[in-house]
Image (tube, rainbow, N blue to C red; front, side):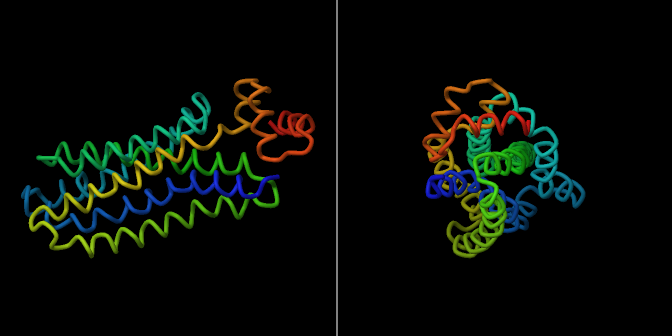
Length: 226
């Protein structure tokens, strides 16, 4: 197996975990400014503004397996990146609490779906002896994203007065776009191609690129384990 390729592809998929962690924490910097800006009630502020991304995460984690199975792991990860980007722009430019909550919900769906699609993708391309280490990249990136979000909020505080919170949320567009671009450089999961699409030709090409010695034997193993 080509360990470098497996690590690189796994790292790309795990970047959705970085955005997960970043998005979860970055709202803390916007908490008070938004509350003062829109004069919302404590219930509305807590249930909608601060928690809407979590509601979206719940939905995404429950239903995320369906697009991953139907459209593929790679395509699902791509659309997750698009949801992240749309959420970042929409949240930063929102001019009322309802629009803000909507875009936060959109980002939450992406987060929830990433908790399904990214670990599945990594586990399906990884060898059995490396699977645990590579899937752990997703967990590491969640924590790393949390750390960077706190640092980002700290450095952006006072950057643009009352609009600091817009920059804090909008800056997530950069890791989102990087994630989208990197997704184009990874292949589809060969296991998904075999078990869901019966596309042995594409699967074999990817397995060969990964450095699989006995491609036919690997195909048979995938079929037996499905």
